[in-house]
Length: 51
Image 1 (cartoon, rainbow, N blue to C red):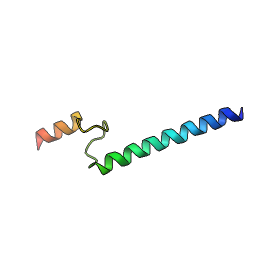
Image 2: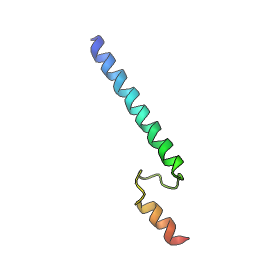
Image 3: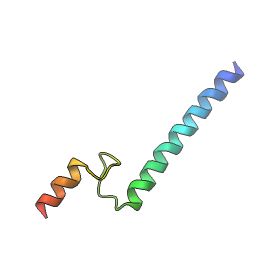
């Protein structure tokens, strides 16, 4: 039972760390895109066309 609890805790910590890392990466790149982490994002393309 202890192993199961450790595994669940580790999974939560890894998931939270991954989400935080992705958010930081997006912000450092300019933060213009929320939908994905790639540069070729539909949201960015729409924004470029408007401006």
